[in-house]
Image 1 (cartoon, helix red, strand yellow):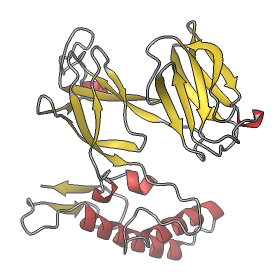
Image 2 (cartoon, helix red, strand yellow; image 1 turned 45 degrees about the horizontal axis):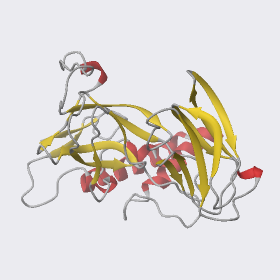
Image 3 (tube, rainbow, N blue to C red; image 1 turned 90 degrees about the vertical axis):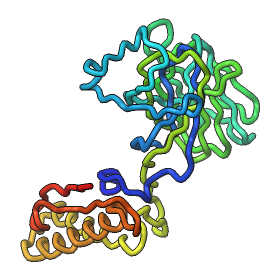
Length: 284
């Protein structure tokens, strides 16, 4: 994961645009669960790109997010366990798509804010029959399973679906976007993003690194193992490091540097000449 999230590789871009609709006066939105880093946010209604503002630039940006309206700027902060928060303090309901999810071992633990304090509640499912808890939550901080389910879990507050989890999912984490101005209209926002690397669980799982560059993981693993087992033989570590650096540069040239005949001028320069761990820069 570290290798695939350190740079903006084109093959890690989510392949289709996602959208969400602004809600009047709502400035906080949960993004796609596979979101890692933004590529762009575009207001389809106003035909404008949104501009990201970092935490250190909030002051210089001039944004007054408590009073501004329809500002085309945003910042990313915090994460949430549910895609939608309750609109008001609500009792939580759970239901499964499979009748076999009906034992205490499969109980769902809801952690959230109720009456101004953080509390938890365990709700035991009853298969495809909805089960309602007893605690009124104003904000959900976590939803976890006690064991794998046979069906899909749906967590709701009244008629609003807060979260769905597949049979093998124990929980989710959504990146939150905060709009630096209260929206006044239901604009449609399109966005694309660099996704999270997929987990490798089985021996036959394939990595996100495209062929023929997967070999770089072998050099990564050997170097990590050398540090772990204490057998820091200088000759073998130097050899592995050289192969790792060559593979890393090949991957960068293939997927970071522009390749097309009519591409804008750009090149990659390794400032350490491949001899150490110095920075690599991309120059347009």
